[in-house]
Length: 488
Figure (cartoon, one colour):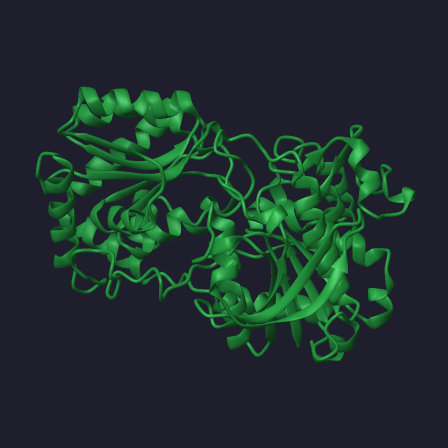
């Protein structure tokens, strides 16, 4: 089966969050499951630099008249065939893929990512005469217009199915309605039954409304987004499409995230030989100027610093955590007030708290390798990869019971310890006292070394790769693709 994946970023070439990790790992997983998978990406500089043996597939004029080139080539870092939109005026900029250096969204983001969807639909309609996708799978708001453009072209007559994955419903790609008329879609598409959302233009809604099938990144999140509490105003639409909505739990790339072979960490280790993990902890404590101690837990945070991620709960609980002898290492960036608050706590407790503002992929690996506990206290979390990285590296996740966190972490209650299913710590109420009770359970279990080691080994052995998710996607593709339905 021929599958085209459309996304705005891809690891290891361009990453702002978990979307890139998934976009980077899924094509290879699909190939191992028997698919012929290719990717379509915007021509950001890092992606263009990695594109080898490229040739011009087509020169096109975007709906608003701008001339762009679609290139075809081989992404060397991923070992996958790719189509890349070569448009330097749109994609070669300072800052992140979406914001300038002052963290302001680019004013023409609606064009930059409408183009991504438009080219995806052109590929669905035979732009490459040598390779015709049977399924076009687009990701998050940046690629959401793919399904809309396909719905108003002849892709359905060519038996090309569209699948749309919501990674985070809170980021919807909302734009002023005046921009709709540049997109080349019929006027009927700007309506309640289309892209219109409370008077604005919603890319996310386009994906949800027009795709043949919708997936999201965990079974629990698929249920949550159909409620008013977590539906972000789109819960009614999602409920109306509940039969076309599936939660598929993400996986992680177990080759990249492997503590036995990880070149980023000081010492390798696995579930059976954990001496290297203890050494990684000592090395990081020494490097950061923390008190070197092995008898009390080291907590880690690798996260965007936003209200969604629940970091204000960590700040509120930090004094109690430190009073029990714990330590905290944080890597992240985001809200300026949260950044300043964590910096202040690090300055006040330099031997117990270390804060690095920014993002460093190698340092993130070292934090997971060194820490005993990974904090993920998110208000909502569609899937979460951070807790999976923690599990893989024996840094037991402490999580709020939502989304993919609820699907992957089992609390260290007495019954789950006895049943040998516990692999972390869970709190159910999004409030500081509930988090603090979970923190106390961490210290209680850490003092019982043999039980801690048993839970850690179970966490590290938990299957977290992409094989199950890829098989589920292949099953979905066959269900929605007319040419494949007899193979289900």
